[in-house]
Length: 132
Image (cartoon, one colour):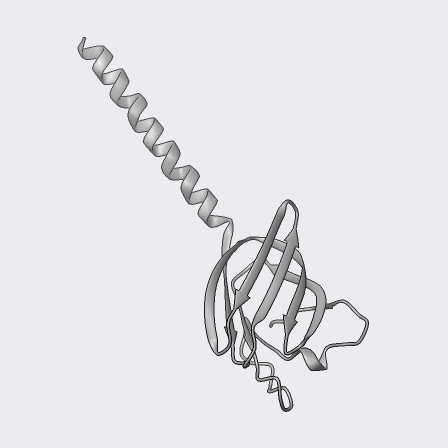
């Protein structure tokens, strides 16, 4: 009887350990994506990757934090009454700041921050979010 209790305890511990490790690995695949919308309109981004699709929306003058799976995605970004398409590399955390629609775009920002101003994107080309 005592031997059976020890075996059952060991099996239960192994089960709990496997759940903990599985959860840790699943969380490790996710990276943070912060979107700050400084425009007076909604920002919407679709991300399409291998077997994964995200639709991310951020209201005017607000920000949201998302967690997305690591990988490279095809994106379509809608902001300031226009749209642009290209790729986004989500191998590490990224912050996108959508600048006001009117006026010239500001400087590029600090590392891992992309200031997005869709009115100056290349015409007719797929473009990639750039971050240093």
